[in-house]
Image (cartoon, rainbow, N blue to C red; front, top):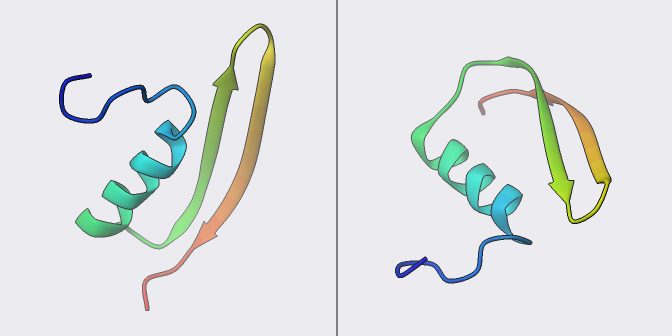
Amino acid sequence: MNDYGNMSSPTVLYVMERFFTQGFDNGYGLMVSMGPGFSCEMVLLNMKNK
């Protein structure tokens, strides 16, 4: 919290930025985000290094 502030909304974007910076293997991935109450979003990703 001291370094990045409130991360409730931008957490998915923060994790994706770190993921792309550190590298990844080609293949499928699942991005899941849960919000307040009962809200949930899922995206199936087909990721390829260029």
